[in-house]
Length: 177
Image 1 (cartoon, helix red, strand yellow):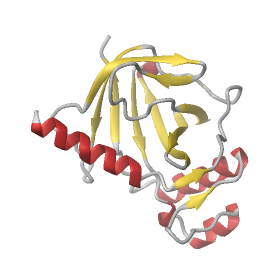
Image 2 (image 1 turned 90 degrees about the horizontal axis):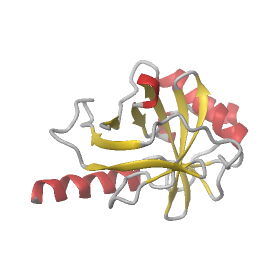
Image 3 (image 1 turned 90 degrees about the vertical axis):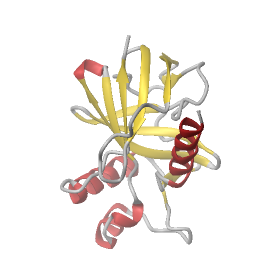
Image 4 (image 1 turned 60 degrees about the horizontal axis):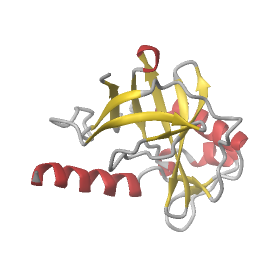
């Protein structure tokens, strides 16, 4: 039990510090959201920085699409009210509410929507030239504030192009039933 609570605390801390791309308002609205994940029972397993999965899952519960948001009535779903938008084939932008706005990540969807992995991008890992080209800058805390959906899409394309060889998966979701 304590091990599970410790893993959950680490996960919550990581999620609150990760995703340093943010906006004050939703950039992926109802009509712009895609719903590639299947409804059902899912498990969530975070990964270590080296890319290996933790020994066991940190969340298990019913996941469903409600008004183009992914929600669960089971406690501690790490990405409650997330919306996805297809960027390219099986690559999706992920938007999730945070304490002071919305955070953004990248999700990779597999197996017809029965499995997904995600990466929380680091704005500081994007080169200064790429940030200038996409019209984004680091703020005093090292985060990047996004102003529009177009900017989000162009920044994430630039980020994925720049980080293609060293992209670390931060977690995995698998549908069980």
